[in-house]
Length: 159
Image (spheres, rainbow, N blue to C red):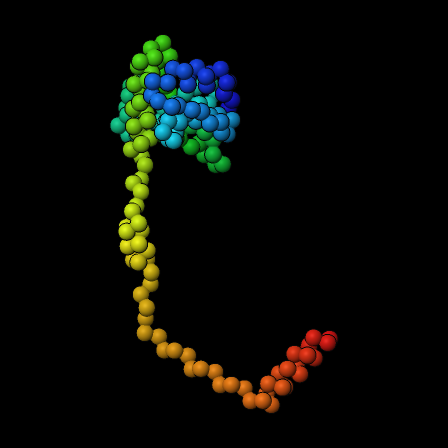
């Protein structure tokens, strides 16, 4: 998987109407980000846009396939779908598809929990105290037994 700098520059220029879009290289490919969210994947100079169950139908109707890579034991399919080639000739439509992908990426975010919600969840996860018998306090050793124990420790150290 390789991605040319020229192709990334082409994409960034065409997707500028979305807002501050930037690329990050990873695993031989690259990801396209906006607002800190990855909404597109680039592999072998091919663009894949983020999709969900609903929007993936648009890609399927165009005869396109999702991004797949080879895992350790089987192929892994991701929720990024190949962009129709015709979009590279129509910037407005390309930006519209990318905007949908960005909204899908945003909708996949889990809402942040408030401090109160975190405390409540933490309280629920703590085990409740049980009535447990306290162990009997240990009796203090006599002076004679303490001196014997000290002698035994000293003997081990000298060996």
